[in-house]
Length: 335
Ligand SMILES: Cc1cc2nc3c(=O)[nH]c(=O)nc-3n(C[C@H](O)[C@H](O)[C@H](O)COP(=O)(O)OP(=O)(O)OC[C@H]3O[C@@H](n4cnc5c(N)ncnc54)[C@H](O)[C@@H]3O)c2cc1C
Image (cartoon, rainbow, N blue to C red):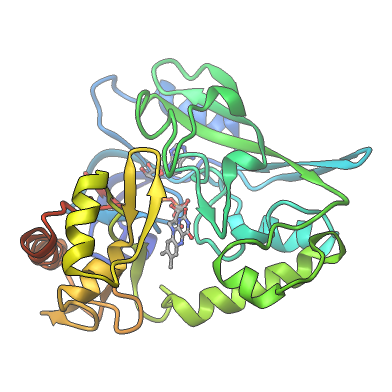
């Protein structure tokens, strides 16, 4: 069924007002292929999951697809377990289910909003683990002709918050399912940030994934605003990478600068730069940078895309002026 002039304000976690000219929620590969076959070749096409990494900057013309494929298959293969999930499955349901079975792999990625189908798009990651570490393969359909395609993880061109689907072949495929390869035994990864502090000297091999999952959920809930309570799209800017010379220049003026070594120089903490530029907890009209987490842009109520653009522009300008660093927006602007 296709809904015309559909309201998308509840379909993006920033709660921005927008409408889709035509909206479909296919629940099978055949339904999706049928939609693509019935679409005019030049008609714009948008794919949404839960809208947790988007800035809807106006109405979406043409066809918008929200995959509703929600099947999950679990298979045990010796010491490993394989999980195949339809694109419409809520990502964190997989973490809860597999953690409950004692399977290792998804615990560090707990509570990341969004769908299984969107997870490969930006190679979601948290607490030292990214999707690429646990992904076996991706099933998709080619937008051009509805043909089913399968990509092995090694073919997805994963990088930090990046993939083939986001970069080189953007818009060419709709992901219909993902298959994960998890471990039924073995260590959990707790060497990162808050997890290292929490689990101290515990032997990672003796930890249960459910315990790590509980810790990740608690850390995230203490740090990040819940979009259901305060609409937001998570980290609004990427952590910028600067050259070694640029880093050293900044460090001289700002001894407390937060940075991590990177293959191209140093990666700076965007949240720290924003806080230092005076934007933590500051509002501009109905939007603001969160009071506890300067990297998260929040909608205090009634915001429109122009408000988001104005705030993002003001933050970027101040960070550029003070640090000579260009912040890049993380959530995808649509249309
Ligand atoms: C509070 C909060 C915390 C977050 N924390 C993290 C974090 O720790 N780590 C992290 O990596 N991300 C994080 N995010 C970002 C977000 O959760 C991820 O990017 C997530 O994968 C987006 O899923 P979605 O279903 O909402 O996708 P959407 O936002 O709806 O779409 C994102 C992009 O993926 C494309 N897409 C969606 N589904 C498909 C599909 N089936 N086929 C092809 N393309 C598709 C869309 O076209 C769009 O370009 C956070 C967001 C929020 C709001």
